[in-house]
Length: 494
Image (tube, helix red, strand yellow):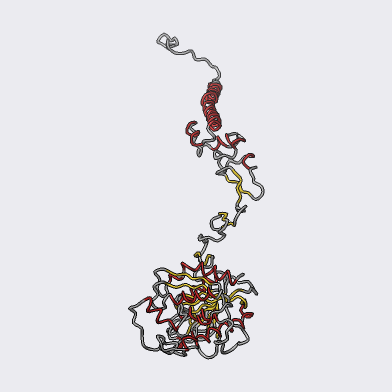
């Protein structure tokens, strides 16, 4: 009120009335539709712009890959680079509805192994073959090789016509003598008594290894291919032989026999010397049994002890032919130097019993083929033949160690009786004689005279002169082994 008692109302004040209060939620309700509209708009934009753009990119890669792979023979590295596709990061683009559903390439390198779909899972091979993912082919686990011609060499998978066993061995080494692949040692050497010892390249069971023959172990023993120290006589430790057999000899198989007689001037030599073992291996490899024999040397017994011994050995081998599978009717002999003399003696005395003394006299000591390597044939003319070829040679005046007389003029009837040339007849065995033309121990004229007498008597005989060869040596072995085999084959296997 003012001084006059009147009510004062300010001009800027509001007219206050007595009315109800308003609801605050009414202000929020109209905002909700706006928010919904905004959300729907964002979703619409995302679907129609962002998602559409990504889908179009994936589809375009698939289309690119399909076309590229078809045009470029499934060249995966080229196409993945061209289509900007990382195969490790986008398997979803290949599996399911992806490129691997293309049946033409369902099993190519394009599709990963863990992309499982019907096309890939149905791949299988029949007849024991195995699926090879790398080459997309069915392959055999084990290949069987069949040769239309020749024999399959299992070590090389090559069909070989004339060489079923070659120098290519899956194990071991090729042995040209036996034609086998062998692991050293090729056979097991087991000693029932004594110790296994190698002498001159040959393995023996011995108690003593000294070269003195009286100190060797003479027990009979054997390996897979030989029997050693068989007694063919009872008067001396020298009357023994070793008997070799062909490899893989069939049960009850009968084989022809070759006897090898070592040299040594009647003063040395042994059945285990290199030449004897060489011929034993060579001839046994050609299907022969081979007997390498010792005989009494001059230090133990003089003439005619060695003559008796070799005849006795032949008779003993015939007497035991059934036991050892030997062919009684086909026996050959080869000898060197003193052994050549003894071999020639066997060849010309088959129907003469002069030197048949001892056991088994009801068996023949004849042989059916002879190879005489530079042996003495005529003691009566030996000195003259030597001086004729070597005029400056000085002859010894002592006794010959075997004949026990002076050969150059003092042996008389003994020289005549001991000489093979004096027993030649038309019934003698075929001869193969070989001699070096510069032999200054036994002159080549000794062999030439024997050959001439054999020819004149109608005996089948062959003579070979080895130019530049002296008395013995390996030049008589390998260069002529094929001729020796051919000779024995002709007269012992026919």
